[in-house]
Image 1 (cartoon, protein in one colour):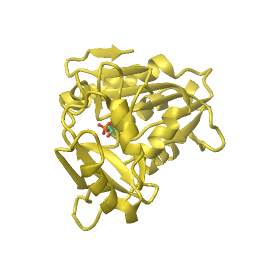
Image 2 (image 1 turned 135 degrees about the vertical axis):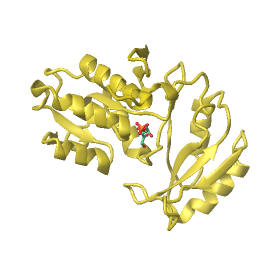
Image 3 (image 1 turned 120 degrees about the vertical axis):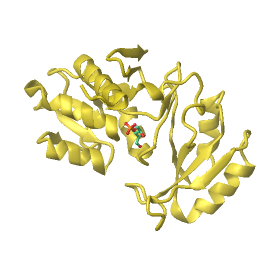
Image 4 (image 1 turned 30 degrees about the horizontal axis):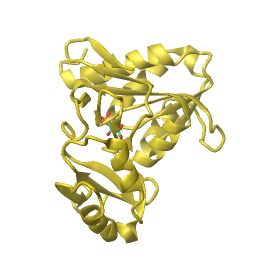
Length: 237
Ligand code: 5RP
């Protein structure tokens, strides 16, 4: 077990979710994105009976994880019905609403979550929250069509029923330009503080012209696993 409690938590959550939800009689599995999902694939690869399943990616990163692991890569066009999707999250509330998109993959993640009969979240203990917007202060990832990003930023400030504390275009780490998603779009991170009605906010943001997808996942997950640094796993369902 890693001496880093965060890594320990990610691995525990991922392993527990794979052990409980991915079985040899599943056919199609959705693979989320991010650092916790690396442990999901690691666990799958430890089980030879899961090698024959078809795996649907949610990003360039997860496509590589599938290919490099020697698993069978499928597409959502071929398999629009998925048995189980397992993905990470940036924050999860007690009703299983989640903020996702810390890795800018929110659109494909939402498609693959929506297509699944069962959507399971895996995360370390830092992601468990009493109220969305409290722990994840980087803001809600809003994917926008590039030419409309300034318009969307204006609309976020002026058209929503709650005002953001802060909103910014997500820049690449070297600040040389904006982060570009796998769909060729930009991401605006809008921080609203505590969000009392996430579904209402999701609907309002989605209606803004220029918005492609929003990293608020409301009522989508059936279960979440949180790995604690002490070796235990807590769940929400
Ligand atoms: C990427 C995501 C990730 O699942 C989320 O950011 C969690 O990542 P990590 O497992 O690295 O904490 O939504 O768009």
